[in-house]
Length: 254
Ligand code: NDP
Ligand code: 8X3
Image 1: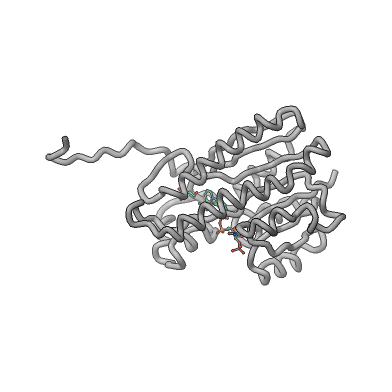
Image 2: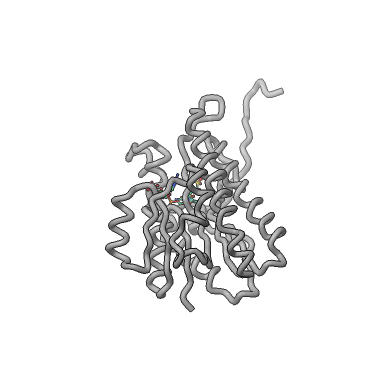
């Protein structure tokens, strides 16, 4: 059976790999991103099973209007993948740029919940659907400079679990996939505002996950039998593990 997916953040990284993975299986993907030229390239590559949609998920008016603005033949969404998101900066909280904080909240939280709220009534009416939210290990394991990014991904985990609580009688599945270190995407370039040296240093001497590992996890979750819901997947490369809690050792500690 061919599925219709709505995938945010399809112009790079995980979202693009997810679109490719599902279209290779004969499914249809509505792909959302801000960069028109990337969307056009993907359309050329993937053909008419790919519907490019230039949309900024922080434009909440446009997002809220989705049920009316989607082409009629593409309105019955089977799978929503809330993937669009970003980290900005690693400054400690007392020095962080408030504009960075606001954009992370507006994208990772407000964008995600508005897209969900726009598409959910259709799923409920059809008594069918799967929502995959892309969280992060950052939502569980605090690290210096993670502040609002980590908190936004903690939101994604609890929102996902609460969606399940609301939807338990509606045959709608919800999964939060929380990857750790993933290389090969634009994530760190965005986080360090285009500083390639800082971005590359994140992955130096590691073998991180890549975007296809995440696409494979999404594919697995979606293709399980309807009665199986995976609540959360926390995935890391083998070279990464949760670390010790921070302890400040200073002679004058009180
Ligand atoms: P990339 O930066 O490679 O891709 C992010 C995608 O999101 C792009 O397609 C971008 O497209 C889109 N996007 C960003 N802001 C908006 C917006 N306002 N409206 C619409 N689309 C938007 O990142 P990744 O693929 O690595 O990350 C994808 C998700 O996974 C994010 O939520 C990230 O937080 C999360 N994650 C990433 C990890 C990693 O290590 N890479 C690990 C764990 C989680 P455009 O610029 O064209 O709008
Ligand atoms: C991305 C993983 O550890 O860089 O969500 O925050 S991390």
